[in-house]
Amino acid sequence: MMRRTLRALCAATLITMIALNAFAGGGKEKSLAASKSSTALTLAIGGEPDEGFDPCTGWGRYGSPLFQSTLLEFDQDMNFANDLASSYSLSPDGLTWTFDIRSDAQFTDGKPVSASDVAFTFNTAKKTDSEVDLTRMKEARAVSSTRVEFLMNSPMSAFINVAATLGIVPEHVYSPNYGQSPIGSGPYKFVQWDKGQQLIVERNEGYYGMKPAFEKLTLLFLDEDGAFAAVQSGLADIAMTTPMLVREMKGYSLLRAKSVDNRGVSLPATKPGTLSADGLPVGNEVTSDIAIRKAVIYGIDRMAIVRDALSGYGTIAYSVCDNLPWWNPETRIVDNDSAGQQAALEAAGWIDTNGDGIREKDGLRASFNLIYPAGDSVRQAIALAFAQQVRRLGIEVLPQGGSWDDIGRKMYADPVMFGWGSHSPMEAYNLFYGKLATTGYNNVTNMVNPVVDRYLDAALAALSAEAANDNWRKAQWDGTTGFSSLGDATWCWIADIEHLYYVRDNLDTGHQRIHPHGHGFPVISNVKEWKFK
Image 1 (spheres, rainbow, N blue to C red):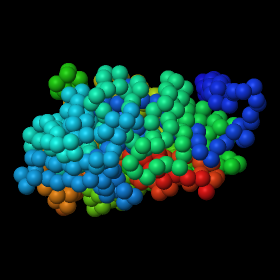
Image 2: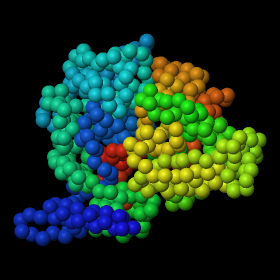
Image 3: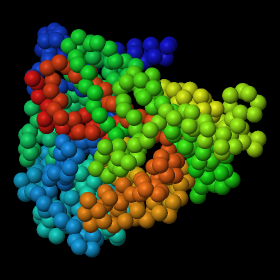
Image 4: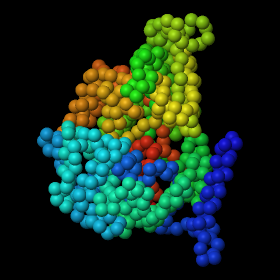
């Protein structure tokens, strides 16, 4: 309680300072209410990116890059639509993507956007070895001022998803410090970044597309308590919040944005005794038994967890990609089968031999740790609710908060409350492909299924979205095997959390797409649609 109070006081001080800076001038006093403009917005919608606003190092991957154009974008139904690109095609062998770009796009310094800038961006992103997955791209090259080719080492159907998320940077001014003061061709231009406090952007009047209604955006970097205080003070037009801080707020409504921002528990699939390539322990004695994994997955009441831990602000999660085009809806399961799973555990030899409520098998206690990121109140609440649910099955779960460094050392051996959610099927590939097992955050459960691997390879090699999606779905479940709960069952998916925002009553935020994971600012992906009512 004391820590939360101190955070709130710090947030209030920061808000006061920002408000004074924003409204001071000319010796005239201005009230917050009187200062509201029909052409400017103040937002508190997430934390600032540690590495700045450089798409080549990952900026914009979970939402709109804001300052930069992308070749493609997602429409309201999550289909691909042209942005900087005017057309694109794929060669019959799947090894060459060709994009034609529009000729009327320019960077905010007045220089035209050319195919050379596009090629430079993709080649630079590949060299940085960042979270932008371009491992299968050989090189990008401009063949004219408006045409760029992407040469692949092997086919990659998901390259199109990268084209919809990687912002284009200007070759003529790019440097290692580009992300500190970016120049782009997107709907807004960078003005000022006061680190730890705020980001100020202005409308790009030279933007080729539909121009936003708002001339200026001020993004405040506040934690959940600070964002709540900004709403209480009337400073913010829109502010992200959490289930624990939802209240009736005069002058604001609650935006409940659907997401694929899931929370799930990794369940290591192999027995301990081996090490990863970087020397970390792999495997868990308890979760390596599929009877335990299935019991956990099928025996919990997800709706109760959504109700109790998320105050109802979420939906049941069945996979890492619910409701996206490559999701297999057959992976919906009937959960809350406590009685059936207890019987299955008994049949598998897991018995409560000493009457303490926890099962044992061959002297092994059905108990495991569950690590969650310390300081993440939502994951902590879900972890505690999950542990309560699993306890009634006769399985002991011991939640414990840890740093990300701590999680990184233990995640191949101990279950972790993870959060995923991407607008690319490569996330599923990285989580379940056998050859990626226990490499970084890839395939942390050490699952190896050759049939699944063949489907994943076929999905990437596909020459059409339809063929790719068919194989992505079969990798999840083909009627016999798959990486989903129906098959290898190495993840207990619990909930897709709703992204919650206080929105000023007269602000229309348009049609929100399904949000990805909460990094970045996914709510402003459609900022061009926003307007005051």
